[in-house]
Image 1 (cartoon, rainbow, N blue to C red):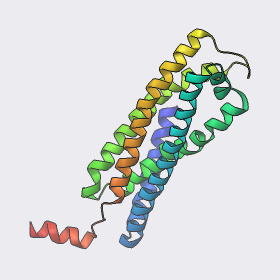
Image 2 (image 1 turned 90 degrees about the vertical axis):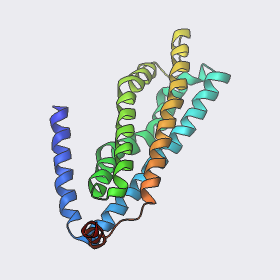
Image 3 (image 1 turned 45 degrees about the vertical axis):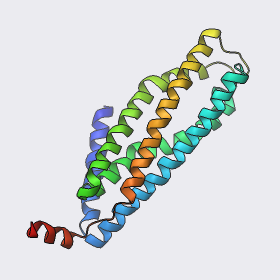
Image 4 (image 1 turned 180 degrees about the horizontal axis):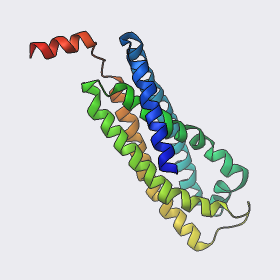
Length: 196
């Protein structure tokens, strides 16, 4: 069911993207707008992730039982807010849109493909391993300490989450690199291909 919904969503985005891309001037605006929106959202998400990582690392090193309060109750809900805003926007709208709108730009295509692959592999890793772990810890009551085993799992989770944050930084860098590649006007591209 979820795969069918994803397929329909992708087909809808492709249809809308193709129509918006038809007029060259409007297509150029949409190509750049999707890149800059992706850079903004991915950068905001990565900044939130860095802050979250620093807080969780400090909590585990200096006050391990405070870590439980970071993932439970109102503190845990407040900490997840940036991720609840930016992750769905990137997963369902911005990354597909930036690829669809910019795919016809040959100088951007490889970077876009790399961005697409590392972003979605990181999201799969997040949804299959990180989310179930932190969800299981957040089920306890606020103020209730975590067990020694849970704290060890949390240390491992935070250590691996630094790698995940590094992948997020790589995605932001790729999106920035795409933003710095100027668009080729279609008449210039056809003249170059005719000359070759």
